[in-house]
Image (cartoon, rainbow, N blue to C red; front, side):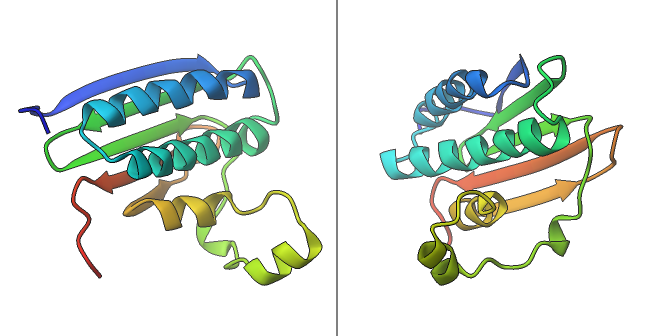
Length: 147
């Protein structure tokens, strides 16, 4: 990466699906600035898209009057994206691991967002306080440590 110390970027945007493209572009530009590969940029972008879609659909029930707050922290080692909402919460640990074969067989749409986030990112952490402050933190390291 080009001699970047810790940088912070913020986006506050209304919670509508039409704004997902703006959010993806925002994330894409920062991830590229951070020196991530094209594949990693795509993974980061998709994970953020899934997280924001979940907020729009589930936390805010498509209410365009609600806001999404996105903070991005970029340094020489990683990118961390924090998405904050004040909507309905949920327990992410209560969600079962999806049966992907069954999904493919019945051509089910939706329901894979959190699974995708956990698969695409190096770290995914939730802090849920319904109606007050829910947040998801998505982290991707520049050089992923081998498992």
